[in-house]
Length: 250
Length: 245
Image (cartoon, rainbow over all chains, first blue to last red; front, side, top):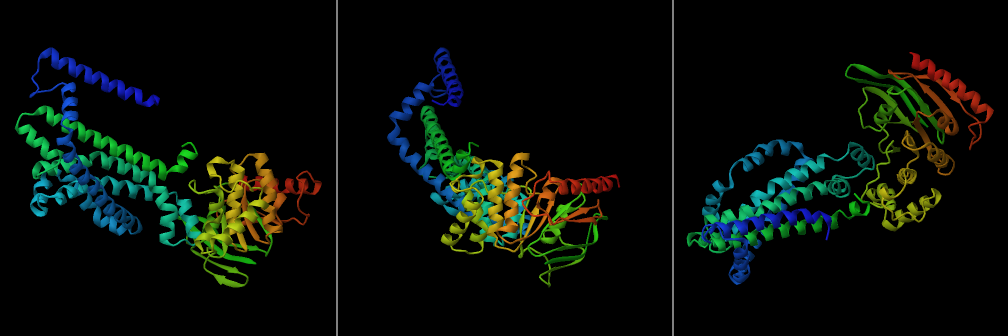
């Protein structure tokens, strides 16, 4: 096991032990705060109930990521190629982040219905901003001397983007994508809270109303695993795309 | 032949150069040497069209041109190799971007690598090889521009003394093997004396040519040759005089 994993594992172990012992010692009922052992039992025993809902949420998140990428990459490229576009759109981009997602969720449900679309858009709205900003910063960080070199080699815009700017900005892009996937669950779950018939957010609302707090926590556990899994997946893709960094020991 | 006349540039009200004239003969090795900050690198930026000139004319082989961006290859102080491309792919970039077929550009690059002592390192990433090898790869890339005129902006300044001495021989190949016309900027008097046909000592800004030294000795030269030692003393004396100004 890598040394870097020891510290978080020890930390998690300490928190769970204190939580478990605290709940048992104080006699806190399960409908207020269930101990971790109870949550784990429910998460496994009720997997047949939880997994279909988790699948729906995962699809919403993945579609949201896809939609965000589809919008963020062309927009960042456009803003880099034409600074006037950046100047024109910057206030709207910032405003889109200033509006709380809780305020947007009911509107999106009204406009797009209770189905998948509103949740996908909610997730995309949250993911879109960090990816766009990171990618744009990556493009802008490209060393002037390299830009001059490509100009002197007679590179077209497309050639410069493909051969220079895109590989240069990839580490920034992945930094933004990691932030994006780790907050993507928020968008999807809020969308499900406001109006849905399936998904972990929907299940949490239903379980909460019946004081099944252990099921709420089990849903949160699955949601957390999903977030960590996506983070790890992005990390693996990043390593594959930035293979030259590993090869040079960076 | 490259002829530059009345080249003038001001930055923030300060004259960098005023009515600067320069001639680089075909297949000649012209070296510019001068105090730091005198505008040597700016001269190259102006010639390549990276920075617009205020006034001046440039002519290549008798034809007036706006700048040298499409006529000259430019090698800068840093090797500027892309860390995600192999040495061979880095060297091939100018040919690739100008549409030379893959097989043709690869065989050109391999021939250059053999001449520059880089054979068997084609697939290496830049960060896995020494500074000298990186600079040789940058030199191969410069040659892949397939242009008759080459501008060298202190191309060896970041290297240690021994590697520098080795690479000077490769720079000489530009003239002897590849028949290029070369305009180089350097701080190193020894390097200038080893490579130059014409050595031009520059003044502090506004930059002008203070003295021209013609070096007719055959190449490769030895830096301890009496004629070069005598020339070195004269060049250093002139540079010291300029530094005092």
